[in-house]
Image 1 (tube, rainbow, N blue to C red):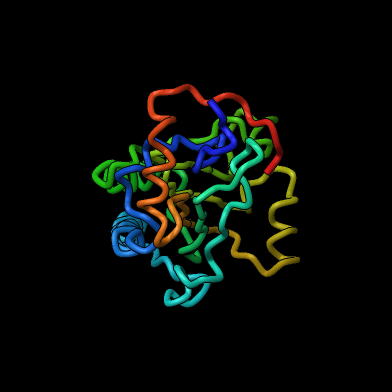
Image 2: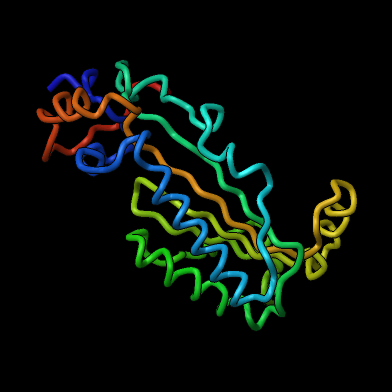
Length: 211
């Protein structure tokens, strides 16, 4: 099998994209997901999440990044979006953080992304037995993902997080979410399905190039 013709990427399950909405059809459901998360997190935490950029720009051309290669020396028909950043300017007490995470997980489970999974290996938490000042979690179905962070920089025992907040004018306390997805480029779904057909059911080898 000539994997140079693989239309996805070495790091991507190409079969999952055969029946997945392409770039042109992803936006409505993605916006609905982020709206539901914004409302749920605000209701649970008591803090409103505000966009970091105009929401009209979330899925603009500048937010999309076509893949330059498939990892095997060939071309990819995929493109990636990273967008939709929403951030609060406060958060509840640490004993309520899990409640916020659980409420957000209810939304992502219904959307098919599963629950948020916390990153337990954060460098910032390596040297403390106390609750870490920052939580980082991701919900994903392998195509779409939502990243969630909860942080209280004033709880960093080193003081470095507070200093950074002061230096860069970041909020000391915040809840943040953002969205991303890698899907088939608009107008290429028929070509993608045809190119993907010989690879269905095969195990992907390791990438041979760094693209």
